[in-house]
Image 1: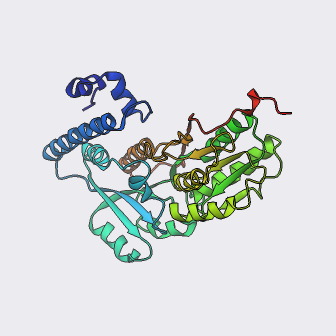
Image 2: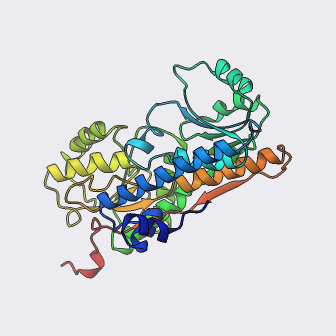
Image 3: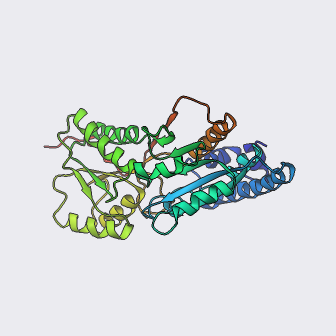
Length: 350
């Protein structure tokens, strides 16, 4: 059942335009109203899921959504810092197709992989969507032994022939670098985490390439690693700033953790953003998470990609894995302008 914006608006006593902004994850809605709409949607989805389960037959098997956790850092941020997982929506979609839905987290350091795979067989798992941001290339091989359709998100397993649904990291970084260069910045530094995972490696590579293409010099030595938690980034950034800005006029921030830690350090040192240094972040942030700073952001989407990946997995299961082609779907990013970039082209310096 498709829920219409006007029906939600009528039920909550707000405008359809406001509902549309929330549904499309766009700014311009106060946090209280945004949460009101989200909670209403969650209630509707729970009722719809109950109805689907009551009406559906026993099912054709299980579709598993698996969060593979190697470091215990990246994917947990979806709920804590970035965008929450809408599991009710995924369950509704899978149930409607006639399958049971299961969501699990696999911790590489503490869970037994052989037992987990055996449980997948016993649970009649027909296909798996793996949230694979933290996985290495070799980590996927044991799952292939199940001989069932597998779709991955936030990673690329080309040699293994896996279908992938990804953020277009390179396009996003190009968008951010071009925005800064067009505003008159050329000495740009990339602030990174310490993890070498797929998304981050793509972003770093794209930064060096785009800086070279925009004739801003060799930027391979302009990538500074700060840490993997907000506190680590804050401490490292304070140490970095002790030596001054070093002619740097802008920073590209690799992730939301980098954005939060770096912003905290800059603000505490009374370094004026954007007049003294400009910032462009990557990944969504909680609203009002950086007091006094509306950060310019490059944003992707998790929910839309994960929904598309699950739909693709179900089609793959129904076709009994007979498709020959490998599917790789990239989702474009958006650059959302804040007030953290100084336009140097509007001023003449003597």
